[in-house]
Image: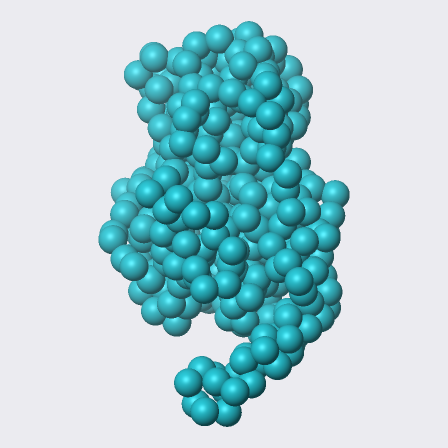
Amino acid sequence: MITPVISATGLWTPPNSVSNEELVESYNAWSDKWNAEHAADIESGAVEAKTHSSVEFIEKASGIKSRFVIDKSGVIDPELMRPSIPERPNEEISVLAEMAVKAARQALEAAGRDPKDIDAVLCAASNMQRAYPAMAVEIQDALGCDGFAFDMNVACSSATFGIQTAADYVRSGSAKSVLMVNPEICSGHLNFTDRDSHFIFGDVATAVLVEAEDIAPAKHWKILGTKLKTQFSNNIRNNFGFLNRAAPEGIGQADKLFVQEGRKVFKEVVPMVATMIGEELERLSIEPTELRRMWLHQANANMNRLISSKVLGREASDDESPTVLDTYANTSSAGSIIAFHKHSDDFAAGEKGLICSFGAGYSAGTVFVERAA
């Protein structure tokens, strides 16, 4: 059987960073204005007053300190409270595709691969810019790749699902080189007027090149095993789609943006993911002590701390479970790939690690890897 490997990764980061202090200032200004406009209803008890957010609240709840976004001006404008990203004409490359291409080119360069060598392009992300033509086909065209391309969406687990899909194509012989990209404009579906979630997301793009071992560069990652799991839940939801004709304004249409029951998600996802990792370790005959590092989904620092402790049987060190959440925030499917991209160069040949995602669906994915050289 053909062995699939990860040949290289790529990362593109937007130039605009928004600190917690900036986000809190804009939210509190918006909430004061809202409270003034609804003073009569608040006094009568018809609606509740909006309470202020704070830097301390955000960091305690999530571990996030800042995030990168495509547009900063609209996000921190109390009169707008959403990113301002102008539509582009059909003849111009879309924003999502442009992000993906930048990350993809970095991965291709790292592997010494020409776009013409790529057999397939998978665009795996939480929020596609449009329904069709597929974002992946536009990315394929912009890069100059042959073969085929398609989109896939499994929310925050899209990247691990994409890696397994790419690996399956390689194993079957359907493709020898598959480019999997994760462009995420998470700020576009975030309700910046919701105190409990206005700080969660950031924007970014990542890329992973999955290839047959016999054509991969010497420094690659052997994919030891992958496992995917889904379980339906309404606790993380976004109802915006083509059946919702009006563009969401962020106020009064909260269910057309990101919504979640955070405490329920924490309670239900942590044991599900920890059990899944443990079962896959056993199936692959890998001891937890053999894991040099876990690149976990970057959604919540407290969730990662608890999952890693359940897997290892003790508190994980920062080296064993690195975080990028503090500077990138939650970037949905891209989070674990950012962590892997930034914190994997120090591995020696034979050392093993785990890329793991979890999120809406519920969905979860594990990719166990071993450094080849």
